[in-house]
Length: 220
Ligand SMILES: [Zn+2]
Image (cartoon, rainbow, N blue to C red; front, top):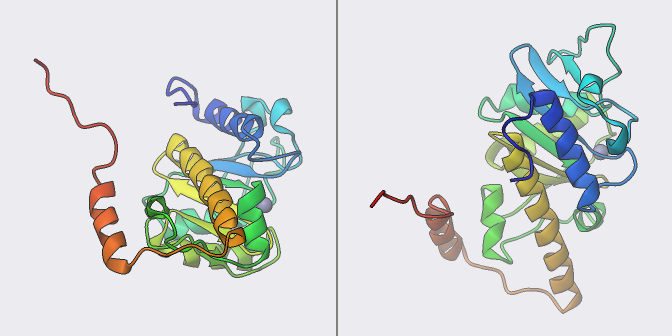
């Protein structure tokens, strides 16, 4: 775990962005993260580097774009986050970044097919690439929310990647996996193209992955 549960929601968003930076998944002021809140969402501000973020710089806003005037301006990508929260009641955290390999595939408008069984972590038999729309636009929000209807992660054409989850740690971990899979798929394409898993093989993975992780221990 890289985001301690003891942190406040705002502090956990700061930690998340600093993790993305330290792990090489973001640079400069690219990328953003949010958490669902009682009033809408908490989201990272626009134009602030992760190293300069503080819990006080995190922006509280509703899903229509209303914010208290004393706060910083939210990430320009807030419409994308708001669209996802409106469409997916099960989503409580979102991590968006321009990680190297995911962005490279997205610029080729490639989805990541079932070349490796861990593609199933994104919730289906592929990690799809959402159609292109201008960053920060309501159209991009609609495109991404539509692509994520049956997924927990997708690529954004000519832009980057986005991962969602029930909590910030899950969304951050999925963002790492998406970048790892993107790098591996890129290598496979360079080596002539992978052999893809069949639907039956992926169905078996989905059944197993629902029990992924350490088995529950019973006390002796
Ligand atoms: Zn972006």
